[in-house]
Image 1: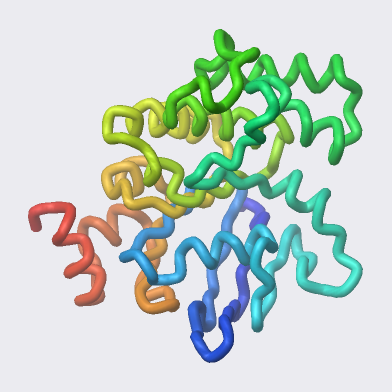
Image 2: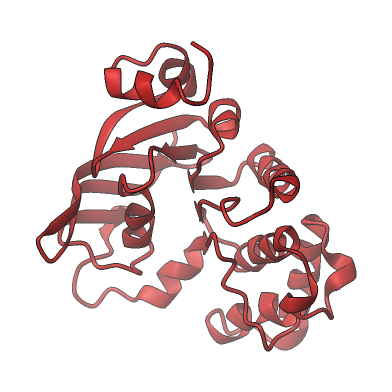
Length: 246
């Protein structure tokens, strides 16, 4: 039986009086690809930001290998090294080269020596097809290339889980495919992934588990065959009808 790496229990998030997440419950097991789908404003990105502690949850628990990451004294930087994140806006350091972007976290957080960090960074940049651009600055490469560098940077930390926050939403249509192809390769290699996405075909074809969110709650979840093939809830059916002929 596969181990649960992450368990989200009764998670809530409020911004003032605005309740963004209510009683969120789900688990991510080793090797799973969990896709979180739903309309804009349903709380998907806030959920991911809570899991990575970029936002502090208002209620509930987030367990990483059974330990609550919200408890006092929990060390966040080592956790973020194990639970990496790829952002929709890339978040690369503009003053660093592609290679330096993929080395800095290894050196500062994992305390790796420069030679080891460089070797690993080059391996992952090669994996995502960016080996020829190691000396480029982010401003010199396309959006799709920036996102591939951001994925290589996250992989260089050798995470147990990789979180993707709408990784293709800031890209031109012709660049979406190159990023999805990289992600599909990672799926085939067994990387555990939690993906917030508007790419419904990707979620349907690649996920092992799909979570549909609406108005800050999990409306329905299950295997892709069930969610995309025979959704039980009217809300899920209506949402998916915008993307697929039913």
